[in-house]
Image 1 (cartoon, helix red, strand yellow):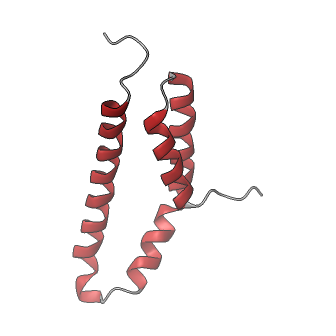
Image 2 (cartoon, rainbow, N blue to C red):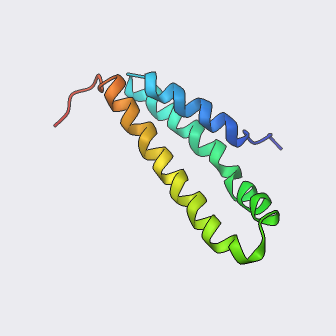
Amino acid sequence: MLPRPAPEHAGHAGCVTCAERAPQFLLVFRGLVGLGLGGAPVAFALYLEFVPSRHRGALLVALQAFWTVGSIVEVRGRLVSAPPAWPRD
C-alpha cells in the first residue's frame, strides 16, 4: 500500500499552485492538493477529541469555514500574482 501524502504537503502544493502558469502543471499541483486533503477527516477527528463537548459543533463549523476561506484566499492570490497564461473566453 502506498503512503498517503500528509495534509501539510497539500499546503506546499497549494503554494506552488500560486506560481504555476501552465494549465497542465496547475492541474497536477491541484491534484496533489486533493491527495493531501484526503487525510483531512482524520485531522478533524483528532482535533475534536481534545475539544470540550459543549464547544465541538461551533468549533467544527469555524474550522471548516476558515478552511474554505483559506482556499479562496489561495486561489485569489494566485490570480493576482500571476494571471493565467492561457486565453480566457
